[in-house]
Length: 312
View 1 (cartoon, rainbow, N blue to C red):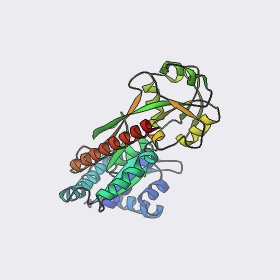
View 2: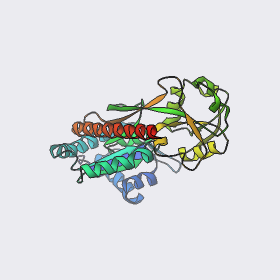
View 3: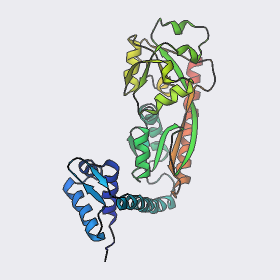
View 4: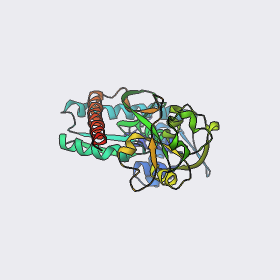
């Protein structure tokens, strides 16, 4: 007779299914590799079934293992939602939220946001994970994160989205660049110029090209980087031009450089910043309240920037 699996065993198996590597799965579960391996073996023994095919080269799931993992993840998510139900029963912003945020938002938006949240809700605990969109979505689906702050649209299933605001892209160019001399700047003017972009995997790359209605074959990508700060330094040193989100400029990313920026003449050269959470969570009301708080802080920040610009 099969014994009921423990939540810990299900967690180990789902982590292994995601990473397909015992060492990485153990690290994700904060246990030793031997502990994780023993837990999965015990699960298989209790069930009287083989879920994992082991070899010296790779880890594969059996057909039964694939289905077992899918259902196990659903169970783990339901358990997370049970905990969320208890959190939701209390006062909003009195517990903790695990927030995933992409690198092209985190350093520019979070410092001010967290400071204001702490002042308004001193008991609120916000745990941050910064990563690429694909990794954050996986973590949300696995129950490791509660909510995401990212650029939309992004392919996700089983989630509820809350668009917060649209953010302009501006051209960033080195001093004396010919595009800086144009009376009116169109996105089509970028064709034929060396464009510096974040490397594949960063959604900012795709959103920037889509916003400018450009295809990869229409531009020359002179350099790819992992951070906007690196790209700005490349621009300042005459290696090419780039597209910057407005929040990076508000955070003074150009400080100390001779790089310049200017807007495009067309409307809609922008990306949408929004939140996403699992559709079945009982804490959606609290997450929407967080979104409204972010929108309020954004409006205040824009108004402050406009006031400072008028003063100068």
